[in-house]
Length: 236
Image (tube, rainbow, N blue to C red):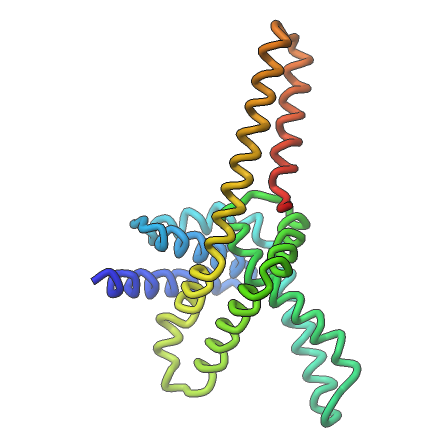
């Protein structure tokens, strides 16, 4: 019964993702919301359809630069392979850097959207943290890249599979990826929460010894707290 319920949720989330990805530039927000909801589904939370659109709106602005990055990357790869791959047979040296860039984008792809779904950060910090996780958890990274690659290959081989792809083509492989990366993401969130709590306790102790504070010192304390929050967003 739980399996049927989860399958129904995955179908709904897949349709929501397709709908919200119709303007290509919003695909990043759609994919981020998908990761968030599937993580919540794994945790046993319900009402995910409503939560999906809430997360989509919340991530729409912040995920747009990431969307453009992958759109440019895919366009760059397609154009170069079309131009050089068809003109020459066998090994094409000029395509080596193209494939290298595609590999970097692929391993970053499987981590950056989960991070955006759960951690607020800047564009460059997200990309850096995604690459750190991709390299430090390379077996999981390769497994997730393989999951998406197999899904694309299978659903593109036979038009009769198109209805299944329409219903589960995005959400099902993402579900298996969530099962792969979620222990890592939970550990990152726990470590960041613990560090933030420690920093807050230290700040509280400093305020206790400081006694009465002026408005200027309160502003400085607020700035220090904001800087600490930005630092804890980086993955060590």
